[in-house]
Image (cartoon, rainbow, N blue to C red):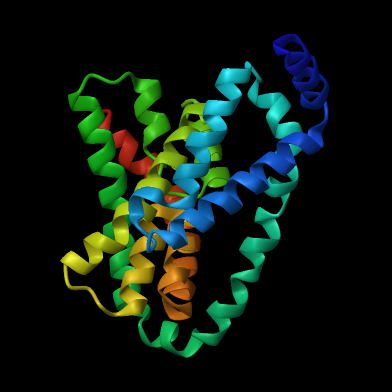
Length: 240
């Protein structure tokens, strides 16, 4: 019986559709659990899906490259999803223009804080130069963060992992922290989530409302630009 199961699994594992179907199924189940438990942050669907899929890949001995061959269609859809953020952004255009000055100040404060605190803490802990360079752009969206890390001499693969961890943590604890700080304005809350935790924070912000989601998308985009400009200059100061 065990031998037949292994043979069946080996056969199915060769099909890219297996990993696509598994990814979609796991996320759908995680989303259903998330809603059933009243959107408790500890069972956020992204966090749950990552844990389940990582466990399956580890237990089955499947390399990530084989998994990505099937799941890359989901990765492809990230592009249209990002472009679609232009719709809520346009709807909030007048408010965004009116808040240009405070948003700029918040962007600079959030971007600099994310870079300096992470690098300073890691340096105090004795992290290597490569690790510090990989850690600095962690709050930017993954393609931008990986490009920055590679250009500066960091490890893009490590940066990708750090970006995911940052996003998950922001999506899990961000809204609760904002409530504790009594930040009730959806624009401010959304912008903070977008700046601090990029795409995953933006997705979480949309659960708070369209206004929060629109400002989160704005924060994510602006922070990608700010991080690309600030990281090289700040790293020269922090590593000198």
